Length: 248
Image (spheres, rainbow, N blue to C red):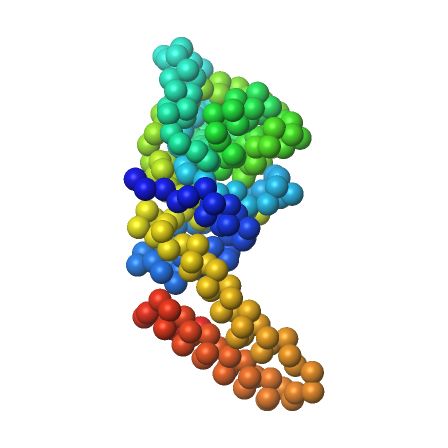
């Protein structure tokens, strides 16, 4: 699989996730009501800004003491899987105990280990702990909540499709995430994502936003007319650039 250049990933990181969604929406043939979190997420390190990387996936079930007994080598085997995938990587963790909160997959130790393996952060529908220490490690977390325990925090399955926050994520999918939530990008949309996101942001800044902001001296009727005209211009620009999707 051909991946985006690291320079392109850095450029994608400069924009928030809704902006990247706007670009993806303009180019994709997929359902634009899917591919992002359907449940509320919480960004525990918003000061770190967005994260962009490729998914590595794992399931765990901290309430079950049988897992570490059944596979005492699970952690070692799982880390071999993580290490074998090029970065930057985002670890997507499905908590099989959901909606119960029994223990955290993430804390100070695990975040430092994963950071050394080229992982930049996690998305988990479970809990995290040691939040300050995770931030100090430079490891971003989008999660449900915090908790005290790690319980029987052992990898159960990895390198498989998982479901977090109502959204399915495949290993290797490009992910953009921030305080708004996360977006998964189909492989065929990766190559045009940056171009489309930059263009759609520019299109907004050149049409509808100025029309809405430049209200001084205008009547309400004149303002609404200007916004309508700018909306049509926005749609025409979008359709001319990407074809077929000229609505606003």
